Image 1 (cartoon, rainbow, N blue to C red):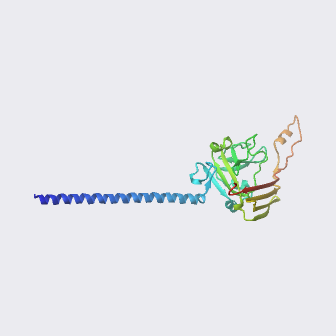
Image 2 (image 1 turned 45 degrees about the horizontal axis):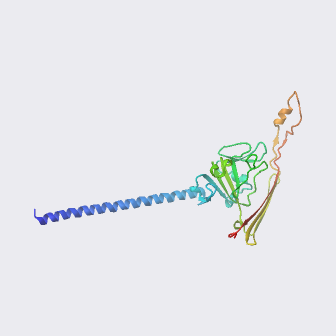
Image 3 (image 1 turned 30 degrees about the horizontal axis):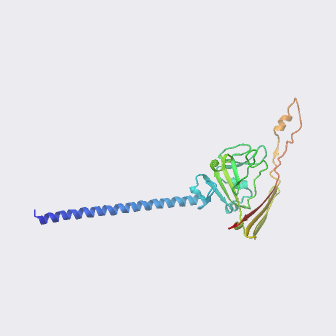
Length: 281
């Protein structure tokens, strides 16, 4: 074989391997790009599914102390906005919290006040669920709960409610080992001038509220006054524990008021003032 033919043969082999390597490189690059595109589409679909499930890119602050998108928060959290409250027709905080999965509102057998049970954790005084109002704990020093007179609150002045179902003690201390509820009130940005309303219902229930936003000495002032009164459901109690004591033949007494109606009457007045300013100094 002549030198010219050998050179031509090796040149053909070189060109063949060069085109083969180039082809494999193009195919590999296309495959990687396609895979990245599929991963991106999958991630976008996950975000869309999350948005459909939770109603948008809401942010929660009580999980870590700073605002985070709810799907990035290291806790099982829920958010209820003022528009959600209007849509469900809720009148009280109890009505709203009853819609949260894993959270049940009950009555204390001692004070007949509201208790919040998260994931089945229950006690008479309910000290293990921390209630915050604009980030400030509502806690009694004696029992660690919201006080024996806590009966909930109206909702007209609530801008949003953030709920953590699960331990929040790492941020808020021992009073939050079952969960945290943060109630955020409306500011001047949430109120358009003066808003007011009245409402009535069964059991002689009457509600009235007025919200106002105004400017005063450079401050944005939001005020709220809400009044609720009701006779409540008056169920007849045929007998109670005192009835059992009264029936003791050795020492009969007559102290029980049963049979008779329960007393669920309540009168509530909720007032608040919110001052805000862009630059305090």
